[in-house]
Length: 230
Image (cartoon, rainbow, N blue to C red; front, side):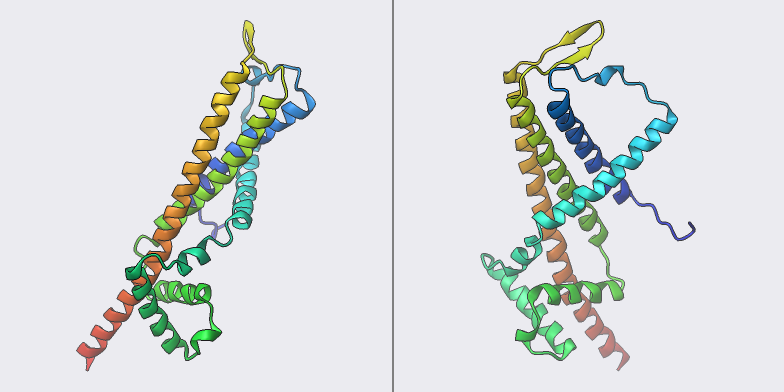
């Protein structure tokens, strides 16, 4: 247990997306097996052990959301590295690419851009120039997991829209949301999913850009240090 390190990523990267995914799964379960019965949200009473179980379940579901995100968005990093719509980016990456190939002593055709970037990132880490690396990584993970969870929640809400007779008990009465109200929530969820995905893409770009530029900056600093030593 001494080696266990807790960070905010455990909360923002796993627990929160897992909580959203948990709500989505509860909603799906309600739709498929108890569609004609009110879902007793406000009548549930949890003790401390129940809350511990909920937290553990949300954390576990957060890992599932991240795993799904890795499958759905596996090519995101490659697309960012391969973009050619920005001449400045192309020139900067070519400079970093050439330096990395020289350090590795390999032919350019033998190493993909993805592995070149991973080398650049590790080179920066080994030289201690982390900068905002963790910030971009954590936020990228948060938005990736949340976009996946919201996508599943949107599907759950769509199923609830198709299956009639939804009801929520508000003691001392039962509320029956209309299909228009459920459709409005569905639209909000779909829009939120899209926006979260856009934020995920944005922080992915920030992470990749930082890694490449930091690799070049580290090279320049090392060159300057070597000149001073001589």
